[in-house]
Image (cartoon, rainbow, N blue to C red; front, side, top):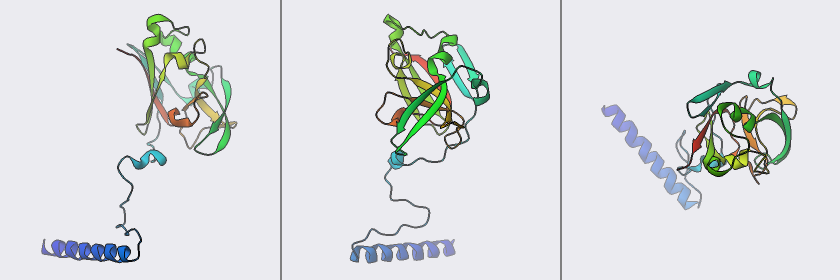
Length: 189
């Protein structure tokens, strides 16, 4: 125990000297290995590694469906061209329109009245979530195209997981969900 206390005291003294020296040179202090000066919540500009993505589960009420890149490959696809503000590149993505995956579970593709209270919560394996209203998802109401993409620039997705939710209407890809693993359709109160 005494050894640990002495080591901690030496470490803290050395750390204190490093901070004083850095302040004397008008530089930020060096932090111990493994620590970051990034404030809490500062991960918005950086992507932490996502756990491996599993199959995509879509739920609406008591109905659900499971999808993988292989099972989606057999469905009709659409291709969209988007500008990815994160990579500063134009991308061509192909995938299944989200509404085509929702209608078999009972979501209407022509919403009106109370149907417009529905919204979609999409989640990635890293815990990132984004929300779309049902009006944005259905071409009958919205001008955007929302797809569950499985290819980018003619190749299967890899770095963003096997599936990614992409929308064409946003100015930046803040609501795109990489490593897509869950979509829940819910009703607003």
